[in-house]
Image (cartoon, rainbow over the protein chains, first blue to last red):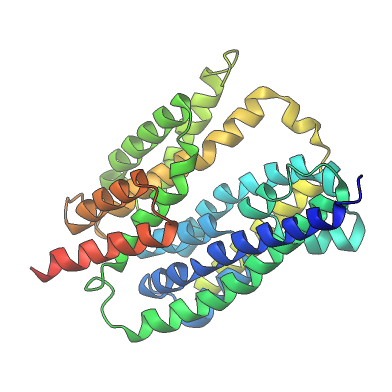
Length: 227
Length: 100
């Protein structure tokens, strides 16, 4: 590596912190949405500390808000959490952590920490991007979750504030960057239709899980063709 | 019961992350596996949007302020607004619709 390495590392830290602050701040929306879904402040903070992967957390409280059992919510959270497994598979050779360090770093494995490390060329740079991004999000996400939860609980009826509508918007915003391919757009439309069709005939929380079958089917049928 | 579900989700999501860092990457070499894995978040998030916006807590379907709020969110996304603006813009829209 050349001797402008120090600058590179400063850039990696700066970029990581930028993404960390932007992402951590929307913990406030999770906190507010979670308490209006019927969880208390402590449960909301526990979700951000323990689950620590935004889409899964929103899915879990979304299912609970629509009257589903907490376990149907947890199942949706786990299904969404499978994408972190894929990130890990891609990052493992690059980050090259073993033993206790790998066990600790795994908790920070999310969309943003992956994005800020997967393109680095050396293990040292990848680790730096991963830790700065994941670490700053972890601190801020939990802090802002608490702020949002306390604010949400003191603000009164969530429906008057439109917070029930905020959940759908949050899911759409999380889905948006994934709609970059025709196959993904078709799967999104198909899954939404299947879920709506399942609402009147299944109990709450189940329609979302049924819709996962669309992904399975599309993945199998699209085999042999480029994605 | 909610606490137990929180712990199940927390431990499960952590193990999914750890598994990714620990399992040999060969699993991903199968195109079907990687394609389905790519599509699962798309299907789940789309289903969550749909259910969140039109389902009622007693298993009915209804178009109300939430659908209008989602349309606002869609416009904001097309305008490349940041995440927080999209989420709270939609909430504001629903709150205003319910005021009138």
